[in-house]
Amino acid sequence: QVRLVESGGGFVQTGGSLELSCAASGSVFRPNTMGWYRQAPGKQRELVASMSSGGRTNYADSVKGRFTISRDDAKNTVSLQMSSLKPEDSAVYYCRIDRAWPRDTTWGQGTQVTVSS
Image 1 (cartoon, helix red, strand yellow):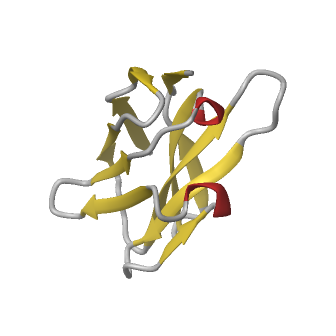
Image 2 (tube, rainbow, N blue to C red; image 1 turned 30 degrees about the horizontal axis):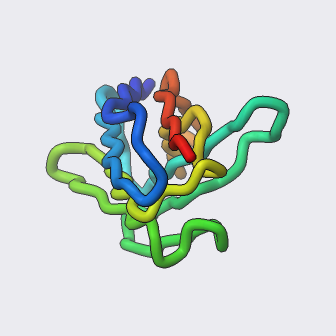
Image 3 (cartoon, rainbow, N blue to C red; image 1 turned 45 degrees about the horizontal axis):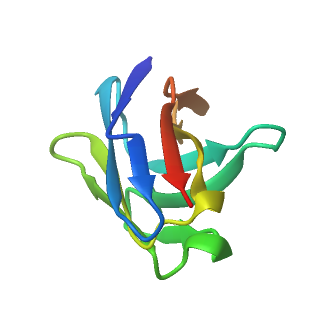
């Protein structure tokens, strides 16, 4: 099993920056994909960015050019650097890991990001 703990959420003004971090512990087998999802009130959870253990990245169109995902496999962490934040980026951000074997998905508990206009 894997446990994910997120940190770094908070309150920021429009145009500001925040960095989210997620630390994985337990059986963090590779290959895997680690990523960030978000869910705003009344909306479905959506992918923000993900990164495979092979280095392949995937970003939502709405964050391309503003957010950067990175990972440190030695520390089993994944980070999301967010810049030029907009009010529509406000949401609970969740860390997620998808393991190839055993094939499963684990979510973190979520961290709130609020961007004021």
